[in-house]
Length: 105
Ligand SMILES: [Zn+2]
Image (cartoon, rainbow, N blue to C red; front, side):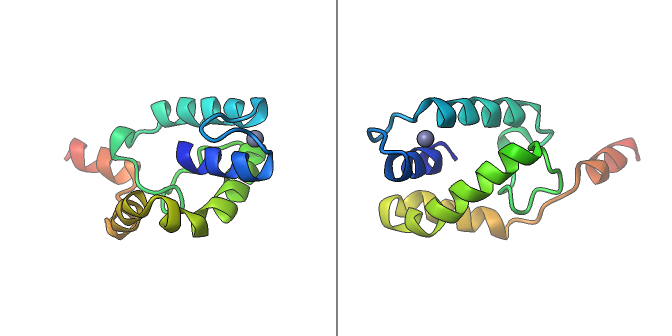
């Protein structure tokens, strides 16, 4: 996600590569904070498949914008990361409620 925000920021906001502007940096901090609270933790599925809509509407809009811009460009710049992302999408996602239910049984 960070790579995508940086790519989007560099091309759209004219920031130096690897250095997001204030707005984007703030967005990244927000995303990171949400990620820490995500019940999936490091095992988090790709956001498109995540059953939890963990972003506030404004941030969700921002995320959509970043993905729409950086998504198709990622395979060119980070082929390995993109491959991992595709593999990640193929993984079955279990809803946290199901996990909780299973742990109770
Ligand atoms: Zn920016």
